[in-house]
Structures are given as structure tokens and as C-alpha cells.
Length: 255
Image (tube, rainbow, N blue to C red; front, side):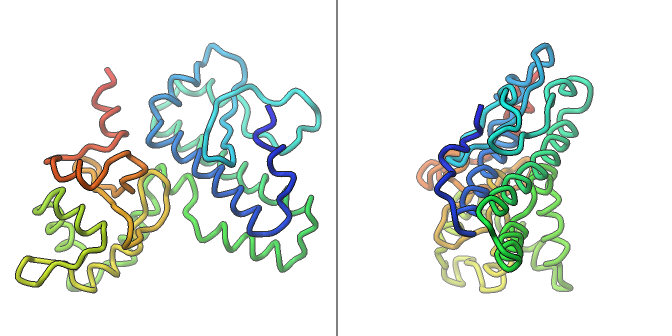
């Protein structure tokens, strides 16, 4: 198991290492959110020490650690499967997220050291990484709460915006997420609402809202998702009265 290290031998710049980091991070976000049911099943406590690997191509896998010592790149936390049935699932996922955060940083700065980054490059790499929410924040919803607390104002624009989104359902989500500005008489969005949602994070990948991307809101957990992350198109959203994200759907389906 090389964790995709061979494909990273050409990485020499801060941007390339950060691209590697984002790919691995995106993979683990999927494992712990939209693919959490599959991830849960693969982490069988009866198996040997298992690790969660995020690959640069945004694919994840649960596998045994590398046999060579020292390994090509730092290894993720060992034995994540052993605690799976010994704690609440959400707490277990949060624990895996914390260890995965540490692993992602160790891999990024391993490449930084290997490729001779100086103090300025290391600082720039850390700042680029630090602009993204941690896996723990994405999995636990902490990042969303921080943004909500920060954006709250006396006029309660946050609450009124949520009411508007709920009232108009999927049609509102599709139009809002595509960045379309409806007319005032149609109850459209004002600039204040647009700025507020500009800091919203996708519940799947943890990336920020962008006005040219389609988003949809889960009616159960009220988290927003990129349409592409949950495989929902604008056309399909128009026919959905009450949307449930993959995590909420899996929780209801599991006995």
C-alpha cells in the first residue's frame, strides 16, 4: 500500500503539494460523510489493523498499512476498525476525522521537507491548508456553527433567509445555487443573503459556496451540499419536495 505516493514524485511546488492535500482531504471527507455507510461496513473489527487512506485522485480506501519500514509516506492511524462497535458511530467518525487531520498535515509537510521548502514556502502551505475547515469540523458540523455564530446580526437575516429557503423548497435551492437573482416581487435574494451564504460550507466536501455552482439543502440536518457531491442535478431538484442527504438517508435505513 503506497497511498498514491508514487504519483507524487513529481510534486515540487507549494501549489502541487496543496493540490495533493486537497485530493486526499476530499477523499476522506467522502468516506466520512456521503460514503459513510460503505466506510462503516469496510471497517470490520474482526479484521487486522486497518487504515483509512485518502488518495490524491479523491478516492479513498480502507487497507492494511504498508509493509516496508520506513514507509514511502507517513502512515494513517492504525486499527481504526477496532473501536467501530465500541462507541457511538458519530463519535467514532469524529475520532477517525481527528486522526485523519493529523495524517494529512504530516503527509503535506513530509513532502515540504522532501522537496526542500523554505520557511516562507512552509508558511504559505500551512496558510493554504488552514483556510480549509478541518475534517473534524466538517464531520461534526463545527465549521457550520462557527460561520453561523459569526454571521448572526441583530436583524436576524440568517433566520429569515432559512425561512425563505424552506418556504420555496427545491425551486429556491436550484435558483439560489445557480446564482440567479429573482426580481423583488418574486421574493428573490438580496445582496445581504448572497454574502451570508458565501461562507456556507458543503456538508460533503467542506468547500465554500460559489455562485456559479448548484447547491441543495437537506431538510433533515439543514446542511447544504454541492449538487455534484450528492449527485443531484438542478432538473432533479425541481421534483424533490423534501430532500434527505445521504447521511440522513443512511441513518434512517440502518436498523
